[in-house]
Amino acid sequence: MNTKQQNLESLKDIHQRFSETVSLNRLTGNDPRAEVNVASAEVTSLVTDSRRVTPGSAFFAIRGLRANGEEFIGEAIQRGAQVLVGEDLNLNAHPGVAKVQVADSRKALAEMARRYHGYPDKSIKLVGITGTNGKTTVSTLTRHLLEESGRPVGLIGTVKYHLGDRELPSFRTTPEASDLYPMLRSMLAGGCSEAVMEVSSHGIHQSRVAGMEMEVVTFLNLTRDHLDYHSNMESYFREKRKIFNGENGKLPKVAIINGDCPYGKRLLEELPPQVRVLSFGLEENNLFRAKNINLESTGTEFLLESPEGSMVIKSPLLGRYNVMNLLAALSILHAMGRSIPDSIRKIGAFEGVDGRMETVDDGQSYNVVVDYAHTPDALRNALGMLRECTEGKLHLVFGCGGDRDKGKRLEMTRVACAGADRVWATADNPRTESLEGIFKDMRKGQTRGAKISFIDDRRRAISLALDHAKPGDCVLIAGKGHECFQEVQYTAIPFDDRKVAKELIQVKSLTC
Image (cartoon, rainbow, N blue to C red):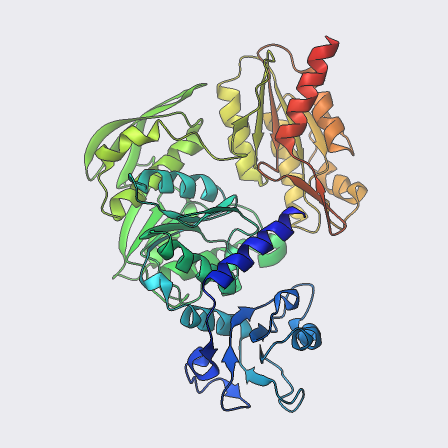
């Protein structure tokens, strides 16, 4: 069974744990906007994937980027769907199956899932974190700092889902509403009164969190990413803004914003007056500010200025951008009513996040780091941080994903050439594109005099980088981080940068 199948089985278990029969009238809330062709029906689950339909399911025919859910109505009915929800249904077809015609199937899913699962977001204090870079580190660090003895805190994010009494590998940063609300309900059953959630721009645009009550929302930064989906930075920003200004349906109580980011500064000016605002950053006007920053190869130290006073923060996290991540997490703690001085001692025990500046150490004389950096800004930050703490040369292995923002590829290459001494460009989830085409776009960013090689095979590229590393050097393997697969032609091929690097280091040690 592959990882995706295991995750779906785990989700199925969560759904079964809270399975109940709900009348169609209760599900729709007798909403006059929903055109229903039968008086009543009984619903046992809400499903967007026809393969997950069981007898009694309500199947939501959602239009996606690659497929239209209405094409799978027949399969859903064969599997036992009792209700169909969609935007363009034939109300006279499939007699005996209830149909709910709606203006927006995604918003309808969010509203109905929230209602079906008993509004769990009202009973749990929810922190939403959004931004191009840093969501996973800030959310995981915040959960670590919020947790107290015997008191679990939930987490929904890119790497893992913590549900109070269990932990699952993540399959999507922000799940569909039909999965998200059962997770929140599972957290409540597992003893959580607080939860932290990464909120992606896709999740906002696709109404996965529409109407959700969030106590605190946090804006980390906004740099180029996902422009294949959002078209331009303005559209990208507007999606992020929705969870701050009420466009998403609910105003947060507190908004925490990076006051150094140009888009953060704009957001500060556009917030409704009833939202309490806390800003963080390095600049003078921020409420949470870092001063006297000391960056070392073993960690970071700085002076925190905050409403709770000035105090020294020591962390094993590396680099200036992790100072910003720490400021964001401490701002959230303050917003949640926790004492920052009482939480400082826990910062030193935070070991980081899988695939985020994760070191691979098997006794070699050089440093090897695996990081998720897959945007120009994230790669620039990662290289800059490692440059500050590397005595020798800095080697980089990176690639650009297929079927994604092509304009980002030349920028990534420019950043790579400027920040590393030696670069190996290689495959990184090519998906349905040819590597030749991806490399062609990347080469447009190649700078004169840069030492860069284009290697089709990612394992070979990592091996070559390790071969060139000398004592005191550092090899950064960027782009995939915690991911344990390569996406090629709709197939997930097992590949974990950390495992591959360790295996190669061990093999090379035997041949020395």
